[in-house]
Amino acid sequence: MTQTNGAIHIALTFDDNFWAPAYATMRSVCLFTRRRTDLVFHLCHRTLTPEHRADLQAITAEFPVTLRWHDLDGSTLFRDVAKRMPENKRLSNIVYARLMIDRLVGPDVERVLYLDCDMLVRDNIEKLFDIDMEGKPIAAVRDSIGAFITGRRDLKGNRDIFDVADPYFNAGMVLIDVPQWRAADIIGRMEQALRDGIMARIYYDQDFLNLVFARNWLQLNWRWNTIDARHAHEGLDPAILHYTGDTKPWGVLAGMLQSVAFARLYRHVMTNELFYRFARHRWKRWWKKRLGLGR
Image (cartoon, rainbow, N blue to C red; front, side, top):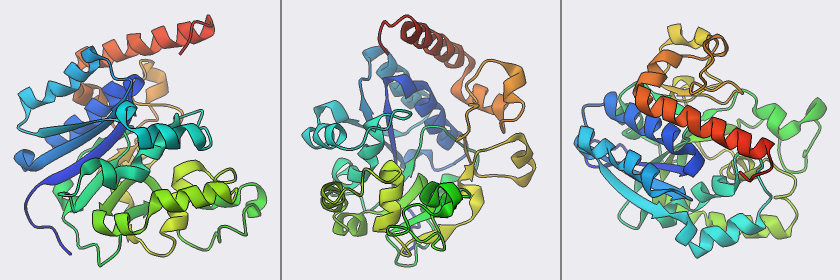
């Protein structure tokens, strides 16, 4: 099925420590499309302060977009799943929210584009959203290090679960056919994987999605999820930059950012005011953790 008009549903998941990157991802989508009135952002959030929610809401003053708020702290299902699943110490267990995306966006949505919040979009998002998915439940980009994620050291790990010969997708950008996603019973299958001990052996939700949709997904061109976006990628005209490396475009040390693609563009997409306010927020968090004063 090819989408040709109507709403463009985009889902983001984040907590209060990622409100500014979420804003930057959302604003980059708005800047590089002319179909702004069609944009519907599903903001799946938790621990979000009123101040930071107001920052996100402010995008509606610049662009004629629709925001739908989904409070994960108020979701019994999310709290239950996040509490029992293996802990993702680097990203927090909010990563499991995308597994229940069909329940969050509602029954009126047939197609939704999931985006991680460490992304910068610089092409018309409708070119991606409107593609013919050729009957597949999802469309995604192959992860360049998928073999190491599944096979681990010497590519020998988890051979009873994965075959490294199978293409493995990065779940930072996933175009979802919602009825097929719903029919896959992802939460039910994850509960079974937890009982079988599989969830404790794999790379959180991304590995699990690759198990659910193994050999049943549409592989897209790399430019729609340019993984570990570096300066060298700029000349290749990437459509979506995915900052998966240790260096992020919201850093304030110019020397470190030379290797990150479109770092200057990213700063101005986030806006200077929010960029430096976010930097102060991160430094404050860092010092609190160092002094044992919490997260």
